[in-house]
Image (cartoon, rainbow, N blue to C red):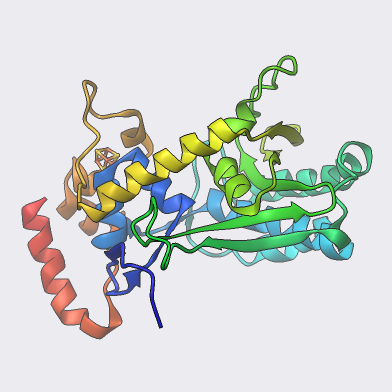
Length: 303
Ligand code: SF4
């Protein structure tokens, strides 16, 4: 049986054969970051609270939409899991208690907003977390035999519309007038539109402000936006296949992504200090623990 082409071999020895939006996006932000995280296995020691909070909110919203479950209760049970775990909190996120209040506020607001503004999203008729895969095996086209993968948060096939759920610290700027269609140019949604064939797209954003807010912005993906995102994917793919993991130095260094880069200490700081302080860790494959640890120490010398 034919298999998709290997794009790269990850830190665990796993051969990656499908390019996802998040891989392409990370490569687009910085090739060095992609290499350090996905190939060398560097990661923050503590998981970001913001990520876990976003997953808890999204699971609660999906449980509500799909099965009428009380989203506050669902959020509480999901978020409780992290109460006594070590997570890293940004200054805006504060601590577990603070995010607990924000999450409960958002989950109280969601059903009201759903009833008033986006009741068209009928959970009983939606697909949630729908995996889409574009396979180029035997097609020999733009992607050199590589598969492209996308997971759609929500597809309502009857409208039809494709949606992405997000949590954010601030609202998106609201489009002014019908002509501004910036959501329709979003890379993530454009990939989803291309792969699903659904051109109406939107973000449902749970905004973590003091007064929790749910923002619903929609747009339409054009042929031009799809061509644009395909070229963007192709650029990232070519760089990965060519092992072009250069730092995004440009005329300004550090670049804007360096300020929130999880692996900055390895790239431009002191990896030894970061390891000693327990800020960063290096994942190792179970099959070659000892060898990888030796390699990790060698890599420290090289960076
Ligand atoms: S610190 Fe900046 S240049 Fe280095 S990996 Fe991170 S984003 Fe890239």
